[in-house]
Length: 73
Image 1 (cartoon, rainbow, N blue to C red):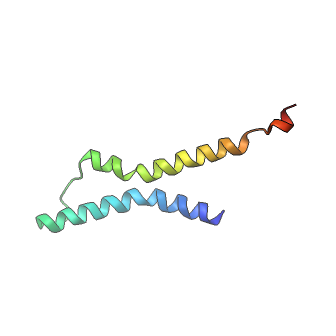
Image 2 (tube, rainbow, N blue to C red):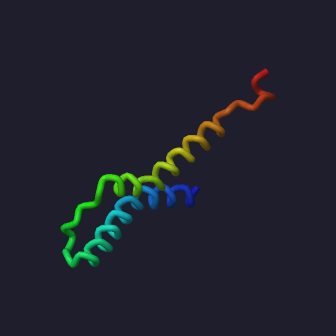
Image 3 (tube, rainbow, N blue to C red):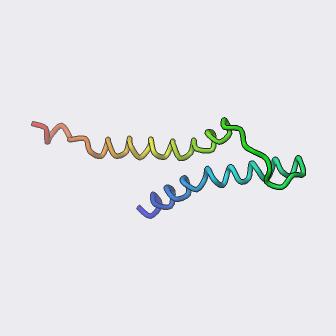
């Protein structure tokens, strides 16, 4: 359970970290200091790990809530 909590925390922080490093990389290329905006497409891409985690948790929750066939009768 601790791993799940750590994964949720990391996945929720990942978009901000990816956006920060993308800005940093672009700024090193242009020589500007944090005055570069990230295109909206790249911002959406940074949220993919969080979306995958949420979908995984939803599937896991649904599968855990299924009633076994033996108990249905």
